[in-house]
Image 1 (cartoon, rainbow, N blue to C red):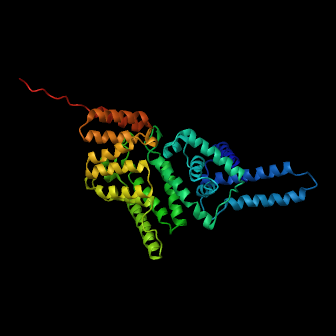
Image 2 (spheres, rainbow, N blue to C red):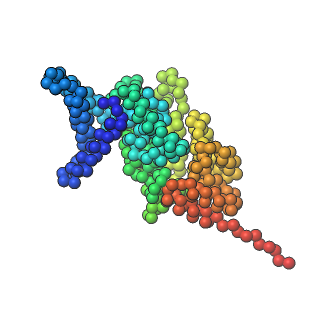
Image 3 (spheres, helix red, strand yellow):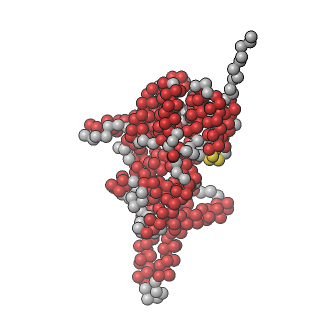
Length: 410
């Protein structure tokens, strides 16, 4: 089977079967495995049906039967692989090198990551129609190239790892801070990304960036309980009750970061030129700075600013620069941070990015410029698609009260 559109249809058909049967038979112990098995049987049925339409009747019956058995076995072999997880297996399948990196990631996020086209567009900071076109073209490219739905092996598996890591990373990000909707977080996406990351770490134990990504997700997810108030409102990092952080998960994250660093040391000892953490490892190191600080005041902001500078050199992007500006402001004062933020205002990719005016509003408020800060918070509230975040931004705007100057008496 070499048609991603057909594969998508089969997945939908399997869900329909589940909706019909589960109310009577009950939800199976492993719903994912049940759905995958059902999709396999449906795929085999499609192969058989297509063969019957293509072949003559009695004359080639025996020959057709042999071929059918082979096709069914091919489907089973393609889906029963060494990875051991159906979702991860399909991610590796979708991240085929015939597609551009952006197309691979967009297609995989849409089909398997639980993200909408809008979610993906906001993650890439591009218009929604652009992402929609990427997904359509990716499906057509896979179909035209007759790409088989099979698990890559050896070097080919390794070459797709970076794309799979980015998909897992973006799924986690959407779960950690939902781009739209009524909820500040989507915990199920965080949990799924973490599950996939841990499997990847066991499959590729010598890859520092895999451990770096797991460390990042563990450390970020450890804050989940403190990031949302009892009423569902967002609680910003500096205002969180750190006693509510999951300290067992923090230790897991720090251990994963140590593995990433140890793997780099081993690579250097073996003569590798790669001696620094990758993008995920650097972000994990930043998260570790927060995790190691028992109070917000103890946070090592100069180190965080330095780590963001390293990240900007390794993986330059306006979002990384915006985060660096926040760290610089915390380490060296809001004026220094505002200078960096203002340099980003002309970047077209940030034109509709709500966090740019949000950060700028925060820095202006700290500099005692409430009227300007209020305008920035209101602009950020108008750009965000998340209702919880919008409410927080509007409250911050309302809090920016200009104190009138008093006139001295005669």
